Structures are given as C-alpha cells and as structure tokens.
Amino acid sequence: MKEQKTLIQSESPLCPAQAVCEQTENAVYFYIFYPTRNPENRLKRCWVCNCREAPEQLDAGDKLSMMPKGTFNHAPEGITVHPDGIIWLEDGDSAALLEKGQILAIIPPNYGLYDFPGFAKYAVGQNRYAWELDEQTKAYYDKKLREADYFWQLTNQQKFWEGAQKYYIQTYEAFFGQHTGYYAIDDNKFPMRAIVEGKKNGVTYGITAFLSNFPQPVIECYVKDAKKHRRIEFGFAAADALSSSVKMEAYNCFMALAKYIYADGTFFVHGHTNTWEGIPGCAAFLFINPRAIQGMESPVYKDYKGDPINLLWAVPITKEEYDFTVKFGVNKLLALAKDVTRIHIFDGRPKFM
Image 1 (cartoon, one colour):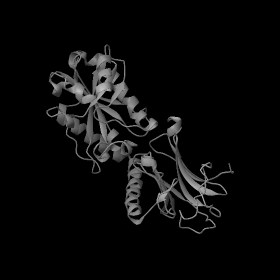
Image 2 (cartoon, rainbow, N blue to C red):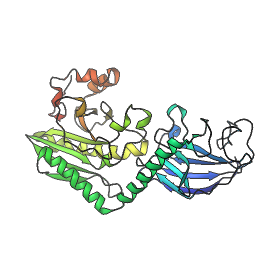
Image 3 (cartoon, rainbow, N blue to C red):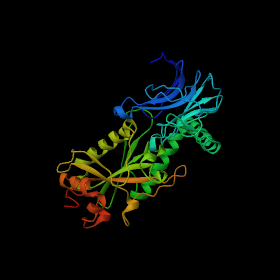
Image 4 (cartoon, rainbow, N blue to C red):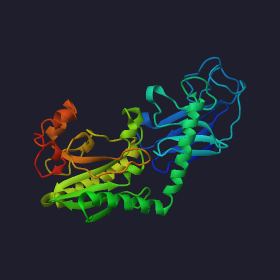
C-alpha cells in the first residue's frame, strides 16, 4: 500500500460518518467511512482520477487502484486535483467531492445497488470504481447539492426548528386535541427530536416529531419508489388505563431507533419489525403504515420537500406473532386481526393470535 495523503475530509452533520478524499502516487479516491456499521458496510469508495500513467488493465488487488486505459477522459499520464469542498446530501449518508464548485465525485444514496460505485467527473462508461458523470446526471446532482447545502444552512438556524416544532404540534393537535406532553429524545444533540403526546377517546397517543425532516438512508437500494417511503415518524397508542406503564417503553424504542437508523444505515417501512421486550407479554414492535390500512386513523401531514410523510404505528406483538410475521409476512398476519383498523391501539391483549 502506497503512502496516502488526505486532501480534504468532512464529518456528516447527521450520521456517524466521515467523508475523506485521499491521494497516493497512483490515484485519488473519495470515500465515506461508517465506523458504527457492520464491517461489510463500513466503507464506500469512488475513484476520482489517476495520478500517473494508466495501466492496460485494472489491478483488482489494489483497493486504491488506478483506472485502466480507456476508462477515463483526463490526460493519460495522470493529473493533479485540488478538491476544496464536500457537501453532504440531505440523508447525511451520501456526499459529493467538489473542486471550485464542480463535482469531482459523488457517492449517492443508491451506492452499491447492482455494484454501483458512484459517479466521477473523469470516468468514462461504467467501471468497477466509478461510473461516468454524464451531463444529465451532473445537472440532477448539481441541483440536489445546491438544495442540500441550503438545507444544512437552514438547520443551523433556530427559527428552522421553531417553525418545524410549531408545525408538528399543530398537526398532532388537529388529530388528538391539545397536547398533554412533550418529550425531547435527542439528548440535547443535533438534530432536534421529540415525542408529542395527547389523549383522545380514552386513548393516549405519543408521536415523534422532526424525524421526517431527514430522509432515511440506503432505502433507494431496497424499496421501489423510495421517495414515497423515505420520510417517517413513529407513533404509539394505548388505552389510557395502560398507557402509563407501557408508553415509555415505546418512547425509549423510538429514541433508540432514531439513532439506529443513521448509525447502522437502515430504514423502516410498513411491515418491518423491531425486537423489544420491555412490554410484558410482547417480543417486538410491528410497524404499520395507516396508508396501507383503509380506515386506520392517522394525523394528516403535508408533504415535505415533495415527499409524503409516513406515520408508522408501533404495534406490540407477541413472540408467536413475531415468529409468524418473519415466516409468512405482514399481510398474512394482518389477515388474522378481528379489526385491522384498530390494531395500533394497545389494550394489553394480542391482536392477532
């Protein structure tokens, strides 16, 4: 391994992640390191340029390999780049490397899908360590980066969070009336996260706020029409007589998941589960999107930045119900409910078995 020189680096404002551009005598690479993730998911990398004469073939054994002849459009003897900026996209999980405002390389949200390695200014065609940044793709990401840069500036302003807080409280009060509780779940760290609590018709509701300001990471690699599912809030509902003994378990779960999504690089959508044994008799939460259940109640959210906001009700399920869901899927489980529109309201009894 040749001696490496760090040209520029940046910490994600949202994820425990670091973007770094490094150079050896052979090549320059842009990568993102995720120290809290599984070893196979800790590193993403994209070639930027060669620094000396290109080889005839790719050296697959060198993880900072030069790209071979015919796969790039800069001088064949190699070039020198001077990156001067890194912009994180709004998921805080993806980033672009810039030189004088122009994209040198970008590791976008769908990195890794079909072995996609990211885009590079000097790449030609689709290669192992970089794909070509054509004009259409460049224009798309130029716009995304301008929006992201402005978004991160906004999130550093108190008035942004004051406005968001007002919106969430108004939205939830339109659903359950005057809110009766407000719990911060952000450990006084960026970004702001909270649970807004209220009561209606003998039921206590607790619903998160501010999670949907940020799209979930990596969802583009796994979910069709990810734009429709990438912004979420978590919700919990319980009969008033039981709420005081169980609600904090749900709230603690939400607090943990809000961190876990970005630390582990994962996401939640309708039908997903999370093991959690704090509620007696229950082994996990099943997350249900009321958009998928006709007649199920939900706050009415406005779209945010062109995306719908999805509430995921956390439904406590037993070990038997959890095992059934893992084996047969959520739709088979939902078919067992007596009243599927009310499965989100915890009353101490199993909803399915």
